[in-house]
Length: 289
Ligand code: AMP
Image 1: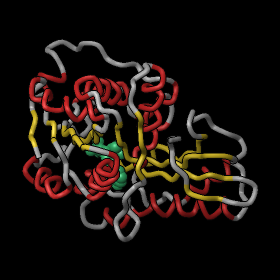
Image 2 (image 1 turned 90 degrees about the vertical axis):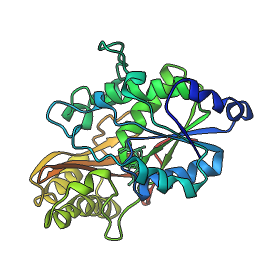
Image 3 (image 1 turned 60 degrees about the vertical axis):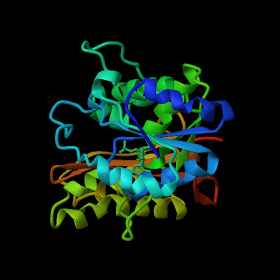
Image 4 (image 1 turned 180 degrees about the horizontal axis):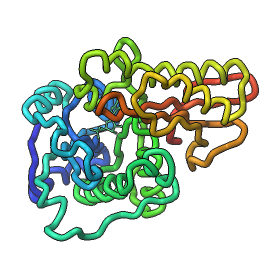
């Protein structure tokens, strides 16, 4: 497994790119089993490069950029046994010049949910992802369904800016009690860990009432809101249509149930993607193959 830092280091990827099977897994490190399942999916497609970079421009003022967990040695030890070809850990100076510079402006899918709650977040995400795509030039990039809006906003950029890259979304890996794995779970203290399960429960209940026949978006959103009483602050409990993230009145087709809430000082997100027709409700992928 090669450790790459500079633009020149990336030249070693040329033969892999020529073989047509270079797969990128972008991360911010603090790796957990969710990240590793992305790597395992990527490994089935081709030669895997994992990027590790805590991207300052996707954190807002007062968010956790400074405290964000960083442990490169631990991350490398987790990746080594998985057959990863290379890990790219750029310096901030390679990814961002001294000035503010050019930023990518997201499309309309970024206007709601986390885009509404975290001003500038998706511009930061798209800017770093575009830079990684241009530096690494992978044929495939793999993202987690856990960050559903992020997947859809990136897919919109890839389509609109004509990046020649195929995207894949991988299901959310969960702890045994259902909590979605996240690097931020490490912040949860004492009883906060059990209160954090309210996100999982609210999503499960919403799925159940849709399975029982409810087709009103407002009714499902209210049920999720009520199920979130254990949270300290709820940013949103919403149902949106996939892929454009418009709000349907009636639920049908592929929909995203999405929640963001604060447990203590920790902001958590979780979601479910469902395919709903008249009488069947199944979990679904976000992106088409
Ligand atoms: P992050 O390091 O948080 O930026 O995440 C890097 C990638 O891992 C993103 O594509 C995330 O959506 C994905 N990811 C994070 N948590 C999970 C999880 N629990 N299951 C699957 N993928 C995840």
